Image 1 (tube, rainbow, N blue to C red):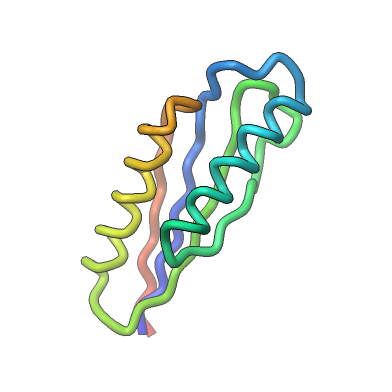
Image 2 (image 1 turned 90 degrees about the vertical axis):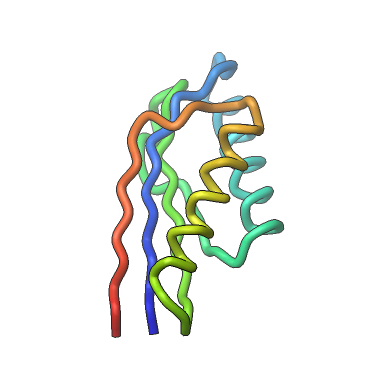
Length: 96
């Protein structure tokens, strides 16, 4: 079993308040949950208006390459949304 964890720090383009930020982040997370087999949440920078930290986790019975490919697709989806740019990326693959 292989477990993957991805943490992304985002620069959000349009929010002018925390309420707008949370709406954008909620939309991004929902979009990723619908399209990919991942669990995700906002994991940091809760009080910053134009920055967010989101984290993803997934499990695979196959290789780490499958998880890295999945994470690349998640990142592409976020970038294509037009709502944010990825500033920092950290990932970890654990083998059990």
